[in-house]
Length: 240
Image (tube, helix red, strand yellow):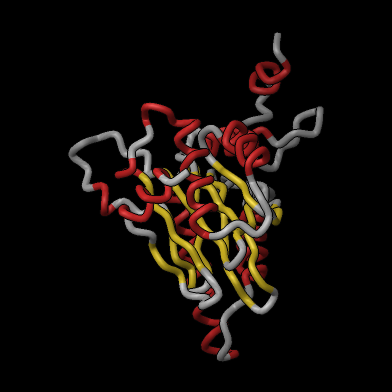
């Protein structure tokens, strides 16, 4: 019998606070599997800013695709995308927005990106050790620019966060990240970074790749998040 099956039969996956004999929290591992079923999002740090490109993964033709939000604005200088249970992500994003607003009201300065990251990470971690709860079934990728410069972070359901130059979360993250490792370059321009993200998505999604499903935002030295329109997406992908 497989170890995972033995764990389940013995009830180690029933409660978030219960470790299995080999030191695993199975509910957390299930949450991570949920993330890998979510739609793909890619973050890239380029020469003058940070870019996030995401696949909306909308397959029902009756859905108004423009109404589907995949990239979120936390503050004018911070953007985020999520993979996994998006309703979970909205709870965390709304908390982050309130946190940014409170900071601006009290201190009259924009909040640092790392403060938002650590606050969300702390919430995620709390939900891995509290009885009666379940972990957030979502990973979040956060990019922004503050006094410390450009930064891109990912936060997983355990509350662990890392800072990256480029990274992907969600469906196909291993394949997409391998593509990014092979093709990422330091000090790329925004158009080159956008092309890299789109090619990485197209390489993985193949015939499922449709420009209508893609949402992309960036923040440059002006520290104001801006959406990239479809024409620019198409032009970046066509250019060699």
